[in-house]
Image (cartoon, rainbow, N blue to C red; front, top):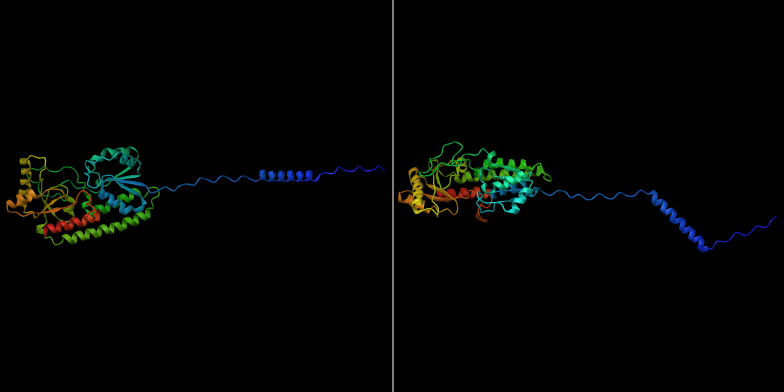
Length: 336
């Protein structure tokens, strides 16, 4: 029987190398069979509150009150600026064009911003004009159509009166229009906005009740007003005043003869109708009319009311609700 040849002996180093290669192969095979985990989807950012641009400060105060943190509200016309002549800046125009909603008074109140509002519409922005939707009255007129004749030398007013906020009932309806305009916007919690609007409506009603109680002591036979403006019709209608005379105190640039004629005409109308109170706005000099009426034997007291914009901070009329009640107290004081 032939002798067996001895098998070659493998060194320890060779054995370890073979084992290492086998382990690597097993790991590679396992990795090849394990499905690759899908890349995580990029995180999505929830949309922030919508941008709402409001033309006038009174309307802006109301809009902020009912929307709260559900929208970013920015007012275009600065307090103290004339909304009829104010032209939005380039930055404001850009903000209006990117807004989700623009709230405006309409009825010619923002004449200076008319082009900006038109541009926003061309950019697909919804522009909500509340004035035309609140049954506006004629400028210098009333819902009943019965107003004292304009003072001698003045022209009848034309167009619609944009000062709808002087009637709290109309502003309650305006809050509903604003809520309807924002309720469907992304990131707006409609039930929250509805609750805030309901709470603000109650505040408007309480302010209206305060105005009525403040003016209640004025007898019906004395509720006659003269005014240097033709836009207090909503206030007169709501609180049962008669506008017996409307006229002008003249301007600083008008000739002395023209100014004397305007002052004299208004004073004569005040005397003829036995008007106890003359309504003006802050900064309007009514003293010449008061003096002219006094010379004719009549006493008229001036009531300065904030009619077109909020008053300065701390003055009482720096919010819409404060404007309503502060104007009422000023008017009552003038009658007293």
